[in-house]
Image (cartoon, rainbow, N blue to C red; front, side, top):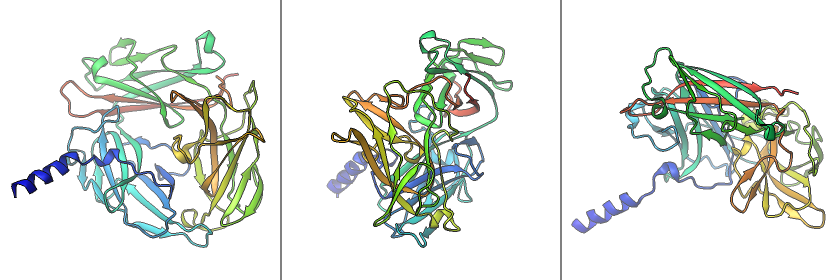
Length: 410
């Protein structure tokens, strides 16, 4: 009996934490975590706001999936507070809103859950990870979201870089934090900030310290440390009509599913800024061939074609909010020596999509400007998140959030 207890204890101690065990699953598609309001894409919202997580499983077999909500620190490590300290109700529960696709060539099951809900009421501001687990507790997907208080007012201003070397390629974010009702004794230790461009956490700037102090105000006026590459306007396509050519789709084939071929994009040695309205890398699921976008929008095999000489010692990827701006094997492009083109194809649900091309070198350094270029006049969205934890405090509050839309100074 003693040996059995020791063995069980060993298994429990060695078992990996669920939040870090995301199981790659190519059948999970069209993941969205957004407010209920139409055309709202950010999962950084006031405490109490309802967010909806939705996704499709192409296995189409109505699996039992569970969601789990976990509080995190400002730097996205597991918080030390217990779940009953930030949730009134259940931290984890089954996803009940499950529907099969209707009248589509690609079979799938659509899942959705709203958080908070009657069973899971979140009581604290902060960083959160929302995970979806299968029936054997494997994590199949995770998404970040942030709930904030309106305790501080965050003023954000953006401009072209003031550094002459980066004046044409980078943008500067400067901001102030006004906290009339808080007592902050040591801002360097108690306050942390994150600056995010276009809802892409992969390029977030962290670790900035306030440069100037006034009564109940912190000022951040960095010239270089808060600079972002400007990038270029996102490319886009719209296949709400999956059977016919449409915006930037030049060829359609009917196979096991519809195949949509995008117009080739030519990489130039000296790219230029090209203005076209975009939604900063986001996507919208929609079809005009059915009444319900969730279950009647079909999937198409999208073919991307980049005309370019081989970019030596770098891999090329297609990225956007549709894959959380991640560089994965599925969206990695292959190079065709004969045609001097990079190609990639993968399934996407009908809708309007923004996307761009990213490169990664042998050291793992990612660039979003190698193909389309970086320009300081590109339109971008910036978000500043302010965290506060008093000395001896238990968790990182989010006391305020500020936004700025850089509209492109010319």
